Image 1: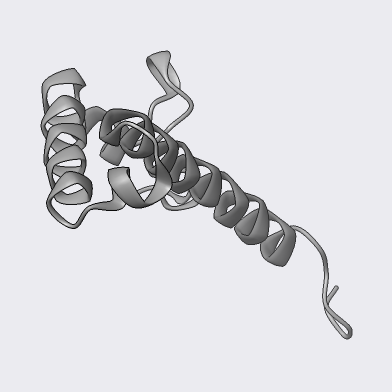
Image 2: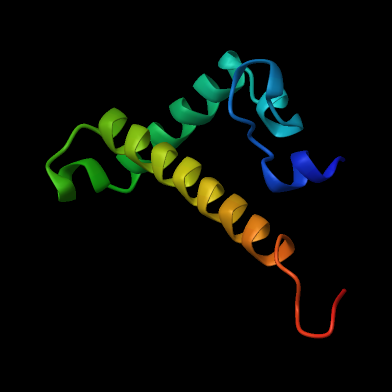
Length: 87
């Protein structure tokens, strides 16, 4: 796995997509979202939040993608500056 793939496993879409992004093609993302939707419904989160389970699943997926972007920023921040004593 390249450094770019480690820093951005889901990829930004298109040609520069990371390895995980390539692995999670549309059918796999749909399967994930379908299972997540079912899980949220099974445990009553849709009733608790008074929101359809598919909307909650979309929100959770966007949260995961946002977290991945934050982790990418964290990796870049930690690896792009010189520490004390480095040349």
